[in-house]
Image (tube, rainbow, N blue to C red):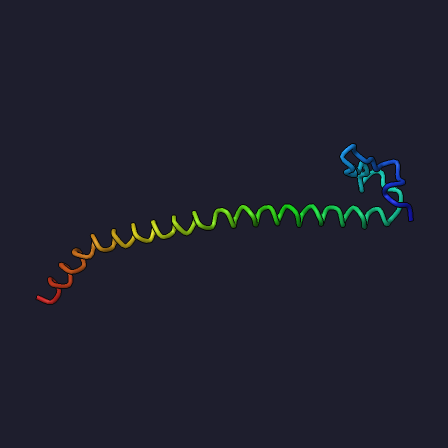
Length: 94
């Protein structure tokens, strides 16, 4: 099995990051390359998910405030329309 650093489809950038030019549908050298490609993609997916979770954690307090505000508005509307239900109950009792 060849190492990615020895492959012609791998380049190392000046910041010491690996840049992979391989494409699993076109130019992989061995079957192990496909497994490595899947691991790289899985790692990228996990990193994206963790970034999304960080944003959700930052938005959580704002969402809580919005939910509380909306609940107060709904309660106020219910309270202001309660007189309609009281009048209907009194008319049915009479």
